[in-house]
Amino acid sequence: MFYTSNSGPVYYDVQGAENSKTIVLTHGIGLNSNMFQAQVDALKDDFKVITWDMPGHGRSHALDGVLKVDQMSGIIMGILDELGIEKAVVGGQSLGSWVAQHTAILYPNRIIGVVNISGTPIEKQLSKVLIHGFKVWLKMSHLFPAKKMFKWTADSKAITQNAKTFAYQSMCQIGKKQFLWMVEGMLNAEAIVVPHGVKQPMLIAHGDHEMPKFVEKECKEWFASIDNATYYLIPDAGHNGNQDNPIAFNQALIAFLKSI
Image 1 (spheres, one colour):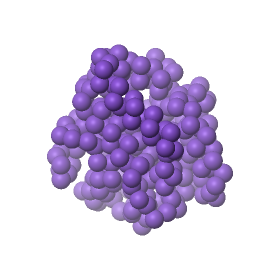
Image 2: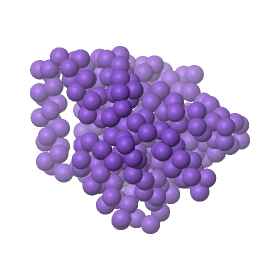
Image 3: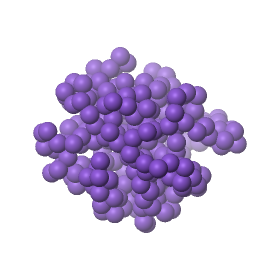
Image 4: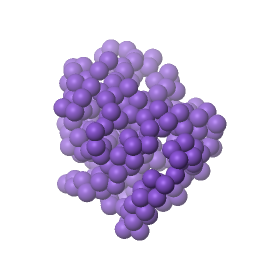
């Protein structure tokens, strides 16, 4: 199905039983909604699962400029309204985690829980050193052939061959220009101002082979600083932990959803 957003058609898929608890899952940079197939398969008998492709990804419309991360929350709510769903859990991987958090903060009466997969708190700005490093990489990336850049990125984010192959193919599908616009959008997202952090119950999960390493540190500090969160270290998994070890992650996810 396609939702007609202000900037073009956005692809989404709905699986699961009617009148059941709903979760909306948002992928990370350069990936697409198919990264959650193992979660859809595990959840659809007891929950309603919505997956979607952010603009510039998968089957959604191509970007004509830098991804506007702050507009993604409006698209999620538009999809929920189109389906007549009043309340939902939102979740996301990496950049998708920021989208999920932003949605929960902006629409507290509609969002009942948040699932963060290798995401950091949106209310906490990345360090100046990290931002500088990302910007240097962004400039230098124009010098590298697209396929080599995508191969290196995929290999650094996942540890299983299936997850690496999926990431590589996803990035090749969208191309270098779209990918770099998404990375720049992630950096611009650091300027998003939110009144507070997430207040809803949260699952904070990341792989035990997390890369980049600062994500693990941020996740642990985040969990220690709040009272309404569950922390889960995904074994034998990298940044794309829900794909590297779906069986273990799905167990934690189902337990969290049932606890809300």
